[in-house]
Image 1 (tube, rainbow, N blue to C red):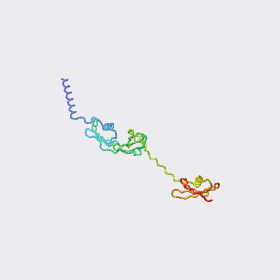
Image 2 (cartoon, helix red, strand yellow):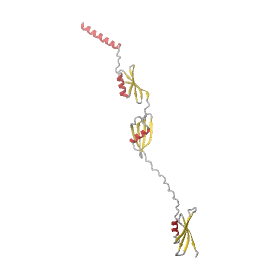
Image 3 (tube, one colour):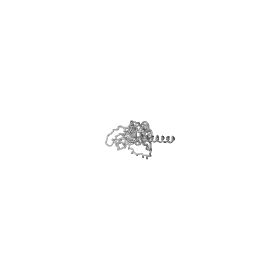
Image 4 (tube, helix red, strand yellow):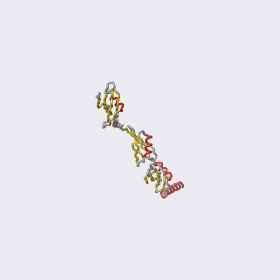
Length: 239
């Protein structure tokens, strides 16, 4: 009899416990807000701005360099259920085009061919060209960090044969009086009595009078002042 009463009591207590669990379920969360924050940051990085409770989830608002986000974390198991972008942040452009070119030249030999800014990636694409190779250096516009370098071969350009400028003609040189006398003496050896220069359109000429006492000859010899030619000879035939 006593054993039966003990079994009945145990059955009643078990039933009360089951009824209490059904009527008064456990409502305390399995994870804390701090744990939810740690989960979000470990997965996505950034910095938590605000965490609030919403039903069976935590609403974790956090900020990354590229924008503000919202993650819903299940309060029972700590799993991230959804994550959405709230606001896109314009990436800071700290590096100038000139600085980007200088950084690229530290990585590749040659000269700057072009510098292009990619707004979506907040990066610079800098092309550095040398005789047989074109290098593309991709670097962060925010920090200047080099993220990628690639090369491609290019054909060497053939040298351009520039026309050799023709030398300017030297101005015509007028021979001197003494040179004219020497040329005249080739026609008649003797002493020059007079040498007169006459200006003409084609350069002028000299009239040189030569006298030879030994042969008793006299002549007036016309010498071209540019070419040195003997143009005419006039002999003095007086006795």
